[in-house]
Length: 342
Image (cartoon, one colour):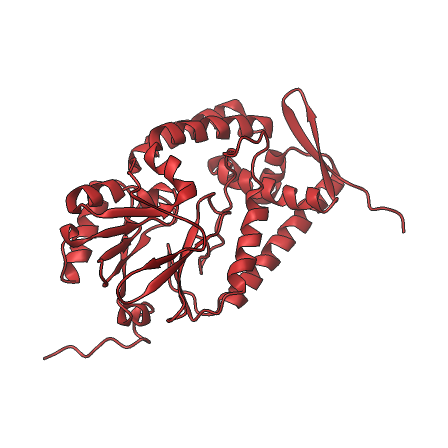
């Protein structure tokens, strides 16, 4: 008996599949779970993201592509949405097997092509930031050991087609417009199919969880770290202005009401900033002390993620004149700024 065609109500990705964009859920070693990569049936046959560098991930990618009637050797273009290893780890393997071009935003090229050196520089910066903001030495050392252990899930890849913000990436049946959306990472990029009102968003916007705007080292010669959350909120505002029917994320299910979801994210960050401001009104604190007050032991086991969250909201408060940073002896503490008398 022939199986009836899958209805959109049965499969949240059915609308995308009908447009030739097929989600493959690839396993990762991370708490976020599987990563969504997308095979676009077009000319060239295109893979958006590749999954982490592991034998298990490669087997599932190979099996998923085969289930759609292709082989990895048929892929002619790999598009990378950003620099994180659960998205770029297998890109070099796919490119080596198929001879595919590899496309990524120009800002990502140094990191992707010099992955090991860049990852070490990121770890060194992360350690410095953690110690400055009150994380104990033994916790910082343990987190660095974990990061080193995970490093093998990424691999360097040569980018043969650097992309510029705003340029069109033309396939035979569709054009994907390239938009840089920094915040979650410095290199987050979304790809807009204007005709179908679809957006490949990777980790820029996720339906079930709020993307982490992770703190990163400066890459423009500046001595100050980028304000990741400030950048992220600006990027979300730009995406909110787009007319979209379907957003295809890097984890979880598709998004259909992006403005409502983005407004919820804006409200979440306002509430968190207010809560942190309330903690500072009680007393001066380090960023790590704030994280402990908000999340308890999670601030130890996931110290860098929670520290990134706190520092992002402290940036918002400092920019608004509601908090200030006090630096002494290589350490930072934060205090609330009293409101001006009316």
